[in-house]
Amino acid sequence: MPRYTDDSKEKVRDAVDMIALVSTRTELRRAGVNSYFGRCPFHDERTGSFHVRPEEKHYHCFGCQASGDPFRFVMETEGLDFVGAMESLAGRFGVTLEVADEDPLAKARRERRERLHQLLDRAAAYYARYLWEAGEAAQARAYLAGRGLAEETLKAYRVGYAPSAWDRLLLVARGAGFSEDELLATGLAQRNRERNSIYDRFRGRIMFPLADARGRVVGFGARAMRENQPPKYLNTSEGEVFHKGSQLFGIDLARRAAARAGAIVLAEGYTDVLALHQAGIENAVGIMGTSFTDEQARELERTARTLVLALDADGAGQEAMVRAARVAEGRSLELRVVALPAGLDPADLVQREGVEAVRERIARSVPFVEFHVERVLARAETGTAEGKDRALTELRPLLGPLPASVLRDELVRRVAGRLDLSDQLAATLIGEGAPVPQPSGPDVSSARGHANGSAVPPAPVPVALDRRERGERTFLALCIAFPREGRALLEEADLEAHFSSDLARRAAAHLRAHLEAPLEGLPDDDPELSTYVSELDARAARGGASVRPGNLEHAWLSLELARLERAIELARAAGDGSVSRLGAEREQVRTRLRHLSGKLQSA
Image 1 (tube, rainbow, N blue to C red):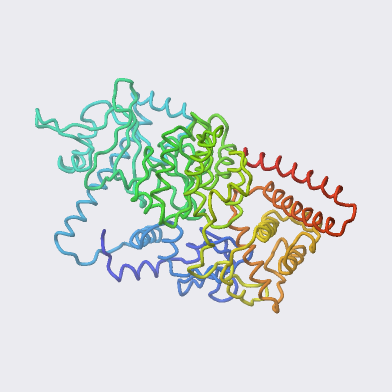
Image 2 (image 1 turned 180 degrees about the horizontal axis):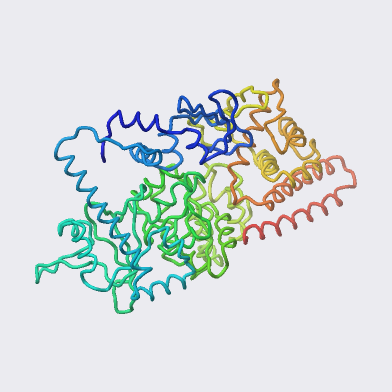
């Protein structure tokens, strides 16, 4: 990796137009001399707390505390390291970078790698041109069109075709001044030891360029076009610039969208990534088969924190998801899973169901633990006690470590239903949830400001909540996420009967009047309420596209069921005659809950 002079760094900083740079991520408005505000591109917020001072080339968010200079901004939004960010900014704002003094060996290594990248980039351009201009590539063009891939998409990924002749690329590369050694080092050629000559490694194949995060070609994946042309897929061999275990197809085109969304979609094959990109899912990358490595995880971790697995629904694909979870374990990565029909990959699905259906499936991805629980239950022998015990043995390490949460509670109930156990017995056999994790740093929600400019006080250390309190918080957060439906339910709610604490009642009363902007109008003399509402608002923002209005209805019915059960207890204690009526109402709510739970699980 080159080391650039300090003068180059300062030239880049001086050349950057900070407003032009930041405006690619968020809309800014002038708020005085050398002062612009907008919504923060690093966290969800309703009011603009992101401040840019263009003359100082500096930004700061008063909500999440993100701050830095142009280099930090590009590193955070595009998933690049410092050198990559400097090179990106230099190219964008027309600055020529100067390499610092380096020893001769380091200089020779750098210049050789640059030559190899140049050769690979030229090869990619040659293959891409050949795909669209050569008569012998007609079959490849027809195949790609048959997969529903548009010319614009194929050109964006520089997809090409390798001539079937033995030396076409060889002759072109030699004519451009590249040596035999460089052709062998890049894996574009291989040696015939009997004749002591070299020839093109890729012939008669569709060529998918494999690039690093900066867009530099490091190798190729090549698909055969004939039945008698094994293997079906041929990759560049391991060498000086290509290492398959660290490669992610399409990472150079996906990283900006992934950094912006905070999530990246993982597919298996090249055409899956192309089809997803064409469907508007621009944060998709391919893991080149069903393997997922530590090197790939490290690369993705620099770009996004959520990995959405859109792998085939067959056995190999499911095993790949489990292996991916093992690789991601211990990292700051959240895994989610897209439910794909058996026998269909994402590219097939785009063609069969259409773009919107595929986008909706990805939006409905579920946490990996939910996928894994379903996988265990699907294989379980539920007809015998021994089979149930074996299933519980598999489920215990999955659910036991989960902290107390609505998700854990729902999964335990699902296990109970499928194994024909009571909720209480299933919870006991699985074990208690892990303690709620303590915060290791400043909480985003506690850093948000009030509308009147006062700071929300720091959130207290979380304590374990009972089931009723968790349900109430879930309901209020979902009201914020779905304000139209939430407003109607809040108006219907009896604050005394539906909420167990005075704090929850105060929050519900506040939200009745401020559901569209929950952090506005909070009283200065009630810091406890400010913190509570801020946490609800942050939780609503974190919910993402997988949360649906049906979840809000489910949370409301759960509150209503708890209210009725308390009312029945009071009626029995008082000896009045309303127990029968309340019992009938409770059964109606239970029936609605069971029906809604089934719909949510099958959606």
